Image 1 (cartoon, rainbow, N blue to C red):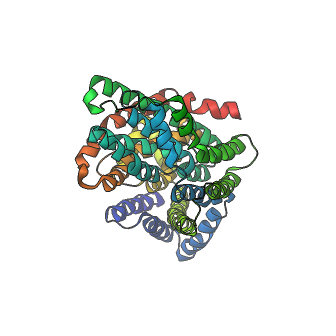
Image 2 (tube, rainbow, N blue to C red):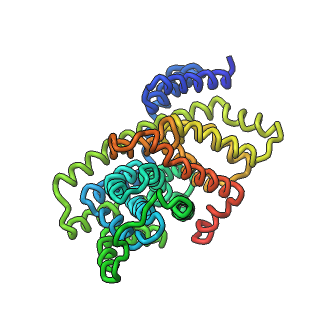
Image 3 (cartoon, helix red, strand yellow):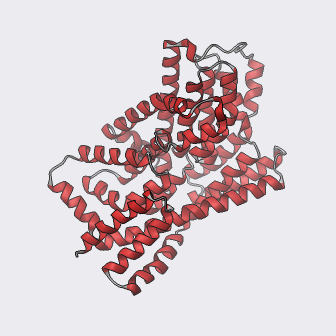
Length: 436
């Protein structure tokens, strides 16, 4: 049996293990070890199991993951982000679907300090969904907006997905952040436009809020509630994009700054610190196990030659790069329906990256588009992790089917944005090039 046939057999075994609900990290490690043993021998397989994880974990940029996670968890547990929705509500509630629009802006602000779409959906779901329901908003619009807006969390820096992608693909994390920022802003604007148009066409979706005309003094006071987050975001990203410090240093400074601001805000408690530390450690450990497994899979597939063989076979058919990219989009949309984003990305990158590189697309551009695709999977059935998070927040007040119906139009908008990014790659690349 040839090396390529062995690789194909073990990749099939990998998907079988995942379907059997074996944890992705364990599946990746087991299949990679078994594949290397089959192709070579026990010593090489065992040697790879010792060397590859060390070389991967030896990346200095990787330390930014726990740092940014710590920053986000501190902000969450010390309630620094609570003023975001209140300020957005005060300024935007007079617009058609104003509370839903305020929720989108609140999610964007929350995303700037957490980088997690699940955390964003959970936190804003607890704050914004009850407020919209109290004002007789359609349950589908209320829940669908928060579930979809939570996906902005992985696009607006800091993004854990982009950090992992940058390490594996050897792309600049800072430039990925800049490209993601552009797509995040476009997504935010598209969501706001969608809400306004839908409410204009059907005012029953979002009745006007009583007493929605805030005075200038009330608006200024509401803005004052946002200073904790603004101080952290400006401090971290001004230094990061201004070249004062690296992404790794930015994460550490952000974590320290969030603790200082929380202390000034008088919400920094021992319990909040303990919960933030525990969640940072457990989340980082889970991510690293999957990432180490993906690194082993990359080594296995590279030695087998299946990635280059697949790329050569596809290109030999004379398929245009655009059609190849459309095929990649479809694959990730399907994977997003079944797997969580980190697993889906790390599972497929060893095969997809050589293909994308051969077609001539920028790997920087692809990283941003990939994160966008993975986040669409967060709101599509049957998995739709953000949808289940929102369902957990609202309980029996709204059915799961209603939440999925609520995100439908947002998924349509997201697919249009992906099409736009494929047709005009410079949308992603112009800011990184300009800042560079």
